Image (cartoon, rainbow, N blue to C red; front, side, top):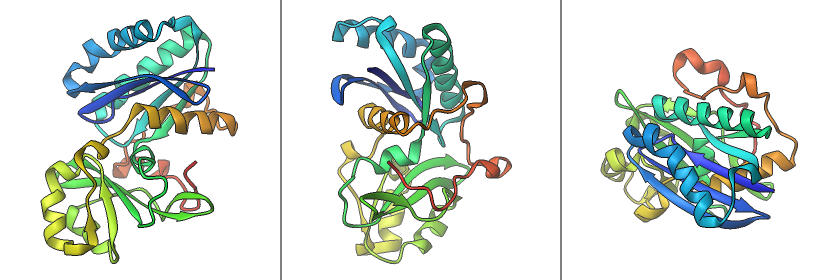
Length: 232
């Protein structure tokens, strides 16, 4: 199965093509303002460089959010449009889960963070258990200081939210804040593809018509995932 995955949830998006668990190609797209003009040409270039055609794609994986409102809507709309043309399913994966999946064997808790604007962050805290990382509680929308109050042990903090609040968390948390190198703080489309394929193999295929972005603002609180949900 040829899997096409793309992320438009933050300022640094990405594209990946995967088949049989093997990564064929992966690109990074910088700047959300350019997604409208660069996403579809980027997909075309990705396929050309891998020597594949769009008609060979059998599964599309896209980031569902939380993240940039415009980017999420554009990405999900593109995924739905391609799926209708190709007659293939779409799997949408939570953005915070994808960030945590950069560290599948972390022995420390992993806290993923995305700048939500309005002096708030989207966050998820994950712990090892049952052979993988599990979301501990709900996805969060809170102030950076309030998030720091929830961290009471050494924790790996990762995600693009570090660009704005990394220094603050280091000041508030001291040695409790473990920060990864910059290249591991962003969503990788290859990781997105892997998680999407795992969901597909598990039969977790959403209804395309009902698939919507996950914004995590108060008006969308009913979209929160149950605390018992484990990440693939």
